[in-house]
Length: 90
Image (cartoon, rainbow, N blue to C red; front, side, top):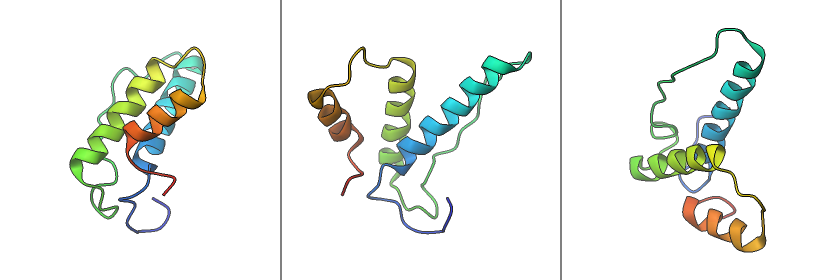
């Protein structure tokens, strides 16, 4: 979090989880010793004031969408993804 503030109505937790997964993926592509496990706290739930259930949902969706991306991104897919996250674009 760059600035301590509420992020309760954003998709910042999703974005942070995605960024973490991407950084790990990039590391594993270029290093002999890959990262094999990660302990990740409930992102955004302290200072960010994101309810634990919402944070867990966003983190799980980022994980799912990272490892199982769609073959094609369409407007219906984008709308479904946005609704599943339940925040952001407010």
